[in-house]
Image (spheres, rainbow, N blue to C red):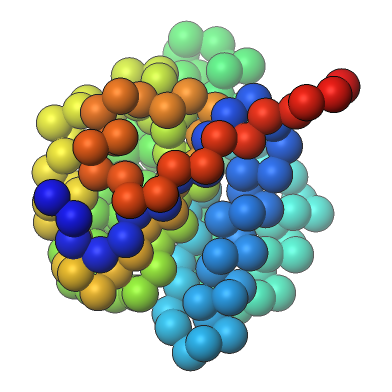
Length: 162
């Protein structure tokens, strides 16, 4: 199945979000509409305020409320944030079904699979619902095997020297 383009930036190195945003900036400069939905990250005021300066060409959404990274939360806090994350995931599905943008960047989305917040079936349903005109860019640390079948391009980012 290959409807549209699906890109993945993953690995332990820094630069996955930067690569995805660069892709989005290039698309926006060509007159294409871009939406960024960020998952699994704590709120970094500087980063978010900078990204928001790119609006309206690049629209940014974050559904989580915590200022901490998901992995740093207590089990109770994780349950609360999971509800917020599911809202973000459902918004992403709506964007894909309606064709609301040309490029949808799902930043740190791979963490949703790695932390079992969403299932492989939910991922598959989301990808099969997208229109041919919409590109999706995924970022995250761990590439789930189930995503490989849908990806057109996969970029592994890792540090060669610390």
